[in-house]
Image (cartoon, rainbow, N blue to C red; front, top):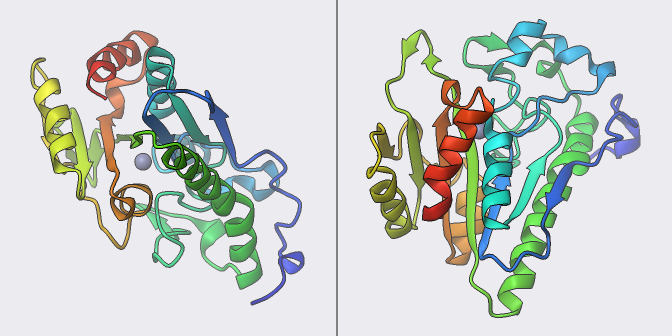
Length: 250
Ligand SMILES: [Zn+2]
């Protein structure tokens, strides 16, 4: 492995990798927002994407941070949110996943990721991935050591049109092992006139996902990932509506 000092991205990641809110919360819930930010350091020129594509869903999960913050505020729960775009390195993928540093997202090739040397990959891992997941692991470790219950919930959003197909689904609860918890969430959401489903629009891949299988299932904790369609999170009023739907259930 090359030393990080050889990376041509050296010194670009001057912002902290994450923002941690309510670290000392007593609430069992740890909210995680891996795709909270579209921030890419200016020197990387948006990884060569045109602005509109970069602004849209491939660089981040639109509305997910606002919803996660709403839930954190409503419950007084801890929130760990990424400060960099998923396009630099995807925090919800293990490092060995082929799309950890994606060369293509949906229909968009990502020019700035096409040819990366190993030192640059390692630099992104060390600056962005490792601090985020070390922090999450530490939060969980500390609470378990105190004998406290822990639940891990990732907050995400999905695009209303994917590969040209509109999606009717409004929210999904993605789950691996914590099926009872997921069902409680779905049952609660189903009290409202909402189109919701378990393991839609995506499924947890135990080997290809990160937060739910690694921090939750592998440790025997209740863990799910919640996906809300992003056109439903475009205004503060709508974010607040989804906060009200979800907060009592988590
Ligand atoms: Zn996401």
